[in-house]
Length: 196
Image 1 (spheres, rainbow, N blue to C red):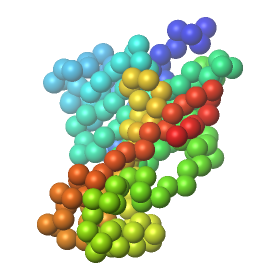
Image 2: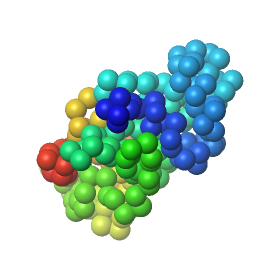
Image 3: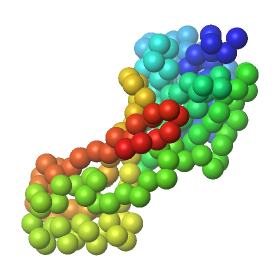
């Protein structure tokens, strides 16, 4: 019965190459599940489990410079949509899988959050910037010189997307202005579609 399948089971089914620093074998993942929050876990992997929230279908790893997390959404047809988010210095690397009847299959074409056409104003309240800063940020954004970071839901079903403002800031002394003007995009999961 797939109802009883939880985030730990899915963690064990992931391919070895999905982890942030090095491959983690299925055997080692089983050990990590048994030693959550223990120092011993670091002997098993340099990136042991930080949070394992079975109730909310969320798990993350700790010990790496960047975040690594996974979660799933239950689908009406009994399958689960599984997302793995590996943050890197160039933004989030997302991998998507479908869990069905004991098997996990990667879907290379599924776009987590759907096809979205982002504008700079989705992430920055440009009214808070000087004209010069604004022009620079718009130019950078238009050239694709920016990185997006995803945050998977531990509570609820929505994904949060933020921008790394570092690439958009024209001068270090203006960083605070950008920081204040920064906002996130929330993608809501409604009727098995992504809405914002």
